[in-house]
Amino acid sequence: MGNYQILEHTADMGIEAWGESSGEMFVQAARGLMDIIGGETETLGEERLIEIRGEDFEEILIRWLNEILFLFESRGFFPGEFEIMVLEDHFLRARVMGEQFDSNRHRVEREVKAVTYHQLKVEKSGNEWRARIYLDL
Amino acid sequence: MALPMEKIGVCRWRLPQEGKMRTEGLVFATDDMMEAIRQEQALEQVRNVATLPGIMGPSIAMPDIHWGYGFPIGGVAAFDENEGGVVSPGGVGYDINCGVRLLRSALNADEIRPRLKELADGLFRNIPSGVGSRRKDLKLTLQEEKQVLQKGALWAVERGFGTENDLLHIEETGRLSGADPDIVSDRALERGQSQLGTLGSGNHFLEVQEVEEIRDEEAAQTLGLSPGQVTVTIHTGSRGLGYQICDDYIGVMRRASRKYGIELPDPQLCSAPLSSPEARQYLSAMACAANFAFANRQLITDWVRETFEQVLGRRPAENQLSVIYDVCHNIAKWETHRVGGKERRLCVHRKGATRAFPPGHPDVPDMYRHVGQPVLIPGDMGRYSYVLVGTQAAYEETFGSTCHGAGRVLSRHAAKKLARGRDIIGQLAARGILVRAAGRATVAEEISEAYKDVMEVVGVVQQAGIGKIVARLRPLAVVKG
Image 1 (spheres, rainbow over the protein chains, first blue to last red):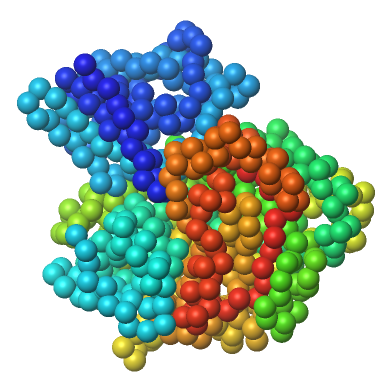
Image 2 (image 1 turned 180 degrees about the vertical axis):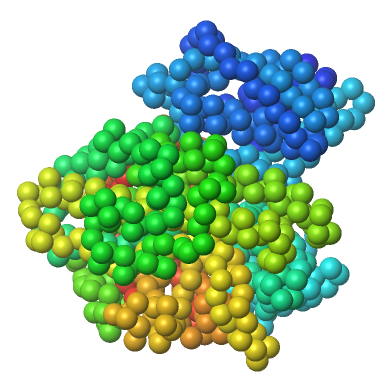
């Protein structure tokens, strides 16, 4: 089973996410991101399809998380659950389930400015995928 | 790994050149601060920056240095195009032209104290803060937004938000040249469209203050500051537009670093030679974000004036909220500096650092030229902020740069733990500081104890001579995102 953990340094926050597959790790990283933003979805009635192309796996992971931030911040969509449909070396297709953002109902804790490449680590050891990502707050 | 820091003078430390470093490091700190700085990886970041091609002079860090992304926060680094120098989006940061604007007023703190609650509420209502907030009466078309990116604060003034006189009191008159909105991504434009005229959250804030202490009479008089006077500080940047431009160009620069064979100790340091098309495009897009931030602070200034009028029921001429100055804390700029006895045109990166040009420098506005450029250093919401002026020593040693703020000492988690069970807002109110905050976690995460005492930070730059303290400002009302 995968999971995530919030990392904290003095001025920064990050996510350590892991799973039995790369897809599971991607889902856990997204959950970690939404945990840092705060607030909870009540329904998962709407969905958005995300497609990302990237140079490498690391770039796809960062773009995936930035895409979720973008859906939330600019499109007013509050994500609650994630499903990876296709994940290859240079391509990701995923479904994000959630609802329209409502600042009265979704009590957001803090703003995340961006997902960074700083000290980014993505690795597979044995049967486990693990990633470490830092955010700019 | 402990790096061998050598103390070389008053609050000055050298990180000797070794390994792949192309130059040495120079850090400004007291002995106590250095102990704390050693605990973080920030000094490794000073070293990493020193490995980048074409760096001129030392890789510099201010006393508010802390661990950043790639470059340390509080870092200054200058690069020469003719020596293979580079530009790096990580040397500017995500919040491009995050900066500070200071307004002075003709009001005395005692005059507004009885109306402070209404003033705090009014500012909180009129100036959108927190995630997803916006002014309903400001809608930008894409064409208008592109004008903002090109014209900066001038765009806002042309639209009736403020006066031409405001522009004379802004770094670069509120407009960086070379901004080409057509190279900015659709996504960055979309993020910016709904966020112009918003404060944001986290450490961004708007503060009504009183001048608590004057340390330099002549400079204070020139800046129009006197004890008991009401001032307003606006601390915000380029919002989602800047974050997106940084992110877009980190992708471009990762590829560019490979293409131009730049060896990177940390992927977040990715960069391109200043002579390359990638560098020119980044600097042009960065200028767009910088201009957006200048326009943002200009709009907020107008709404501050409007709120003071509404609440105090006085005409604008009576409040006289005028701009003292507006500085960038996260920026890369072309400037001329002397290195090794030679005048060079350098790309100076300031990431969590403030330009601090000396008396007599042509880029200091006429009315301030004999005292030096005003430098604005915000502290935390419970203590104070500082006004400084630039010095000749800063010009000679740090490419005309000084510190930018307090910097965190506690993680957000530790701050929340410390705040648990305490009525932070009530405690501040008892000390005459009214706080209004949009975010649920903001107040607890931003408590005074979470930050370094900014007095110690400005104390170091004053002792080292790379900044001169003019005045201390105490908060009366604070709006946080």
